[in-house]
Amino acid sequence: MAAVALAVRLAVIPFVYQQDWMDPFVLEHWAFGRIARSIVAGHGFGSPFADTGLSALLPPVYSYVLAGLFKIFGPETRASVIAALSLNSLFSALTCVPVYLMAKEGFGARVAKWAGWGWAFSPYGVYYGADWAWSTPLVTLELAWLFLCAWRLEKSSRARDWFIFGALCGVAALTEPVTLAVLPLLGLWTFFRLYRQGQPWKAPMISAAVAGVLMLSPWITRNYLLFHKFIPVRSGYGLELYIGNSGDSTRWVNSSLHPNHSNAELAEYERVGEIAYMDHKLQQAKDFIRSHPAWYAWMTCRRILYMWTGYWSFDRSYLKDEPLDPPNIFVNTTMTILGLLGLRRAFQMNPSLAMRFAIVFFFFPLTYYFSHLETYYFRPVDPLIVVLAAVTVAWRPEKTVALRPLGSEV
Image (cartoon, rainbow, N blue to C red; front, side, top):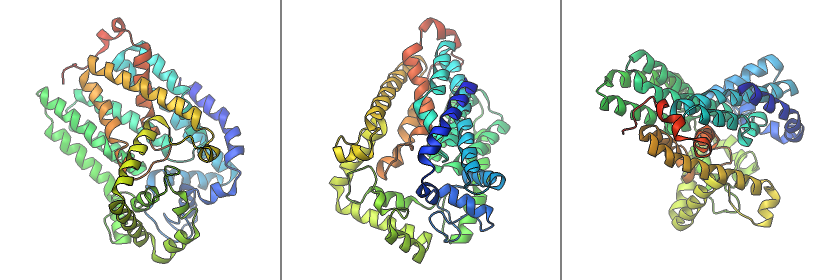
């Protein structure tokens, strides 16, 4: 499955590379690429918008992965971009493995085959693997594996296993900090399960917490020493809140307020520095939200709908800029319906496992509802939706009763 998935994604790269990456604007405003370029040039982790020095705008893991590719193939050359897209295609293809395993262990071999092949040919998996040189495919792979690991750890109270899990959670947080919205909760649910089973849970919990803190500490310390402020992983939340809540509801985000699209915003960023700029954007966003509570509530509801269905507007001017929205609405909504039906069935079969899916579905997108979202923000959850969609389509009671490795009681 993974081999076929990789072949499909690699076959797509030549087409999307010609279409998307030949535009100089893409490379010039590729934040991960700019930071990787700065690292390779010996200027350190910085300059995400312009040559402004050190930064904490993005998390470090994927930036250093790109820097390694730039070191080998040259900064932002054709070869390095294709290498980045190929690596992301590999990350996306390898996600077939945890998808297959979690489906097989939870719902049986038939569902596992549907889920594995479903991910191999998933439109979102293919597109964001082959055309998206961002951290999304890596985060997707990490979240799928850690979801599976947290479930399997219901059978382990060894401190070593939990230390490794905590360290890997730290790596995922340094890849994309939104994972912190769900990984600790998945761990806590496992501790609760251990407690209910009469198994030791305090030492495993301490081990996981210590490992996570140790993994995150160097980056957090670096940011504090450089910017004299506690920055958990990345500094850009103020900007994210600002560009999503400015009074413009034409699209899900007002890109004209981003430094990549606004000379005035870029000039302010360069003039006052990253931290002061982000603090100012945060204050502007808060001021607007306080003065427009009804608009903010309405936009929050629209963001929730958009996250799960892909629908924002059928206005002609909007669709002119987003011509792929109609087919995306069909795919997104269909997968959501199939996934939620599968979740309902999972609660009937194994409430403990189903609760893990529910935790991710509820908490992962929460911060995006209140700030702003992009189409790729929810993609790390897609493998779990594919598994539950396969449950809806392929599950047969006689095939799975003997394959439930964990108790179905909560």
